[in-house]
Length: 349
Image 1 (cartoon, one colour):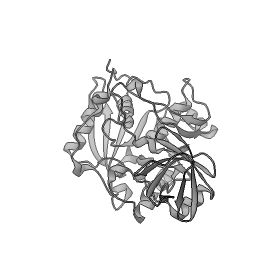
Image 2 (cartoon, helix red, strand yellow):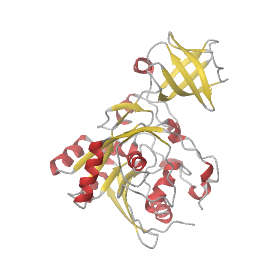
Image 3 (tube, rainbow, N blue to C red):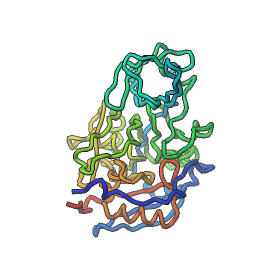
Image 4 (cartoon, rainbow, N blue to C red):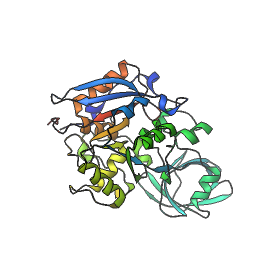
C-alpha cells in the first residue's frame, strides 16, 4: 500500500508560480500518455495546443464554481488582530472558518470587521463557527480579499481578483479556485463553441481544506475535508450521450473529476447534490472520466495522490521529474498537464 512519503518530491523554489502569466493561455502543457508497462509517453506543448487533442465526439466537463473574497482582516474585542478565512457559508449569517490570531478566541467572544460584530459561536477542531449580524456575502463584498494559496507567500492584489477566477465562473461558494480552468480564456471558449465541442458544467465549491496537508503516513487514516457539489440531470444526460457516440469524458480539473466520481459512487452516474469527502488514491476504479486537464500539485497532497491514481504512480513520477527538468511552473498559477486515463495501469500493492 502507498504511504504519504511515497508522494514526496523536491521542488526548486524558483518553479513555484507566484503570479499568473500575462495571458491565461500562455501556459505550457505537458501531455501524459500512460502506457501498459506503467511508464508514460510525455510530450511538451502550449496550452493553445490543447484543443487539438480533443475529438469531435468528446465532452468537456467544467466546474462553474465562483471563488468568494473569503479572507478578511479584523480584530478581537481586546484589539488584537485576527485573520478570518471562510471555509464555508452555512447560512447567510453563519460561516465555518479558520482563524489566525496570537491567541485563539474562545467560544462566545466577539470579533469585529470594521464596525461589524462577529460572534464565535462554536469550534470543531481547527474550524470555528462564526455568526455575523450582517450577511457574510455583504461583509466579503465590503472587506474581503481573494484567498490566494498560502504557498504564494504574498498578499492578494487587484490582479488576483480577476485571475484567481475562471472566465466561466458562475455560482459563488468556493474559497479556492478550480485551477485547471484558469488556463482557459474567452478565445478558447469561443473556439470550443465554434467547433461544436460539447460541454457540460458541474459545481463543486472548493474548500480551503484543499491546502491542508496529509498528516498521517498511513493514508487510510487521513480524513478528507468535505466539499459541496451538484451534478444535475443535464450533466448526466450529456455524459450518457458522449458515451453513446464513443467520445471521451474530459474533466477540466480534479474538482470536476471528484464531482463526477462522487455522483457515481455506486457505479452509475446519477444526479447528486450534497457533500463529498471522496479521497482518491492509487487503486481506485474510475467510473466516469477518461481524460483530465490538471495543474502540477503540491508534494504529499491529496491532489497528487488523485492524479497518481488516474495515470498510474510511475507515470506521474516520470511526468513530474520531466516537468522539473524542463522548468515547468508549478501549483495554482503554474502550467498544466493533460492526462489520458489507462484503466490497465497496474496499481502498486
